[in-house]
Image (cartoon, rainbow, N blue to C red; front, top):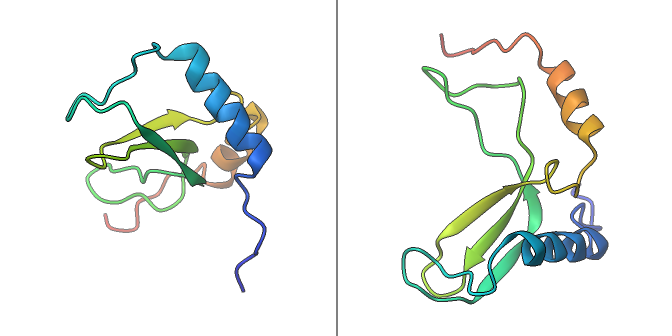
Length: 105
């Protein structure tokens, strides 16, 4: 059963918004439609890795996602670099899938 409490909680979301405010320009516009209204996805996401086929296991890049409210253009920001997640989280995930085997090969 899915857990009701979101992992990317309000405190983490606040940190993400503060980090974006520090790193991005005041006129942070979507490069597709030029709108400047964004929404923060309420989940930490992990884009899949592709190496001659979809990778199952292995290192991941936990990210938070910013979405343009006008056209849906989405931007991934690294959750470890932004210090939303501790660096140890990435290292632990890397150790779990160190073999890096691709079952489709």
